Length: 117
Image (cartoon, rainbow, N blue to C red; front, side):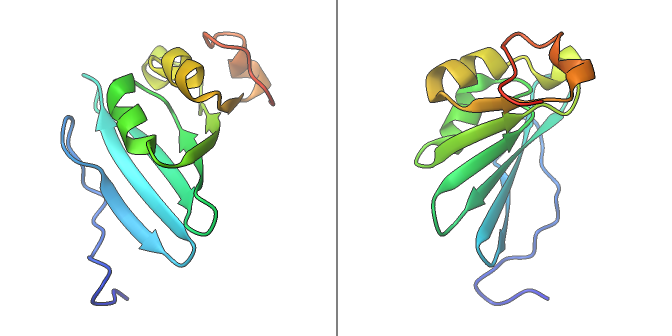
């Protein structure tokens, strides 16, 4: 059910377009389409603390960094080792200091050390 102050979230985003944002009690979920392969990057933000978790720093580091500005990005989770899911990972980690997580079978191919498997 959608309240008047929360627009309907469709999940549809386009490469180069604005993030889709879903507001829940205590959580803001932003979905951004990046790169030539139309990859999705997700930002989960605790609205109480301002802490954030990013899923797949796939491409277009500048757009991801703009999306995460104003929050404390605590961690970046990479879902798997395919290059199109981590092309912006090094730059986003370098500029935010966020910890990183990935499955141990994928971590060895990532361009940055994984903080926690």
